[in-house]
Amino acid sequence: MAALPSSTSLAIPRHVAIVMDGNGRWARKRFMPRGLGHKAGVDALVEVVRAAANRGVGFLTVFAFSSENWKRPEEEVSGLMSLLLVALSKHMGKLKADGVRIRVAGDLEQVSDKVRSALLESEASTAGNDRLVLTVAFNYGGRWDIVQACQRAMAAGVAPEALDEATLSGFMTMSYAPDPDLLIRTGGEVRLSNFLLWQSAYSELYFTDCLWPDFDGAELDRAIESYGERERRFGDVGASGEGEGAVGGLDDVLAEREGL
Image (tube, rainbow, N blue to C red; front, side, top):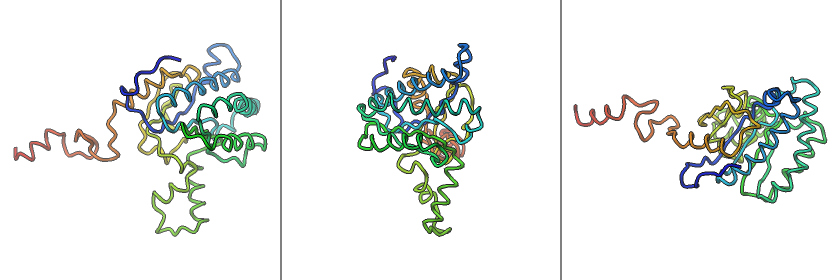
């Protein structure tokens, strides 16, 4: 893995979310089956988890399987499920030893008992770790997350007039994590694809042509460097006074104060 810059040189996002895209194209470019691309993608994820932990990132969320991925060929879906089981078996011990806590976000009612048990076991076996929280978004969709949060709020008896953003956030599947500071998508596509729609309202977005199996610590640093160069305003004008909502630039404001 490429050497990382010193921790003092970058503003480190507390929570990084990643749409891991490009496994199939990576394999096709090499005249390989798509399944080998997904396997290479798992290897890339292991490296990125290590790099994120070394950078001081506290939360890493990855889009492993979307609620729309069931539309893919049955053979590929079956292969992805098998790969998940193999990956958990192969890497769980190292992740646990490295202080990684695994959480799962998604509708597990639709997956097989074997896959569900493996995911829940990974959560239970790493529950005591706190160096990095790795959330695996599996059979997840952002719209599903919002709907299920509303359903849970209604079931809990929350009155319509009492349902505000903070309350609804408490019913989201990732209520344990802060909203992502930085959302990365690999593979050259420029869209969210139904990933963390609620949570990414003010995330900084970073799109790269790098295919996911080629994404490593150096690529993560490039994304973090881009993040560090941005001014996060959350709807305010920001320190520069030139953000959205500002009436004119900083010079205009100062001139107005001086009566010019």
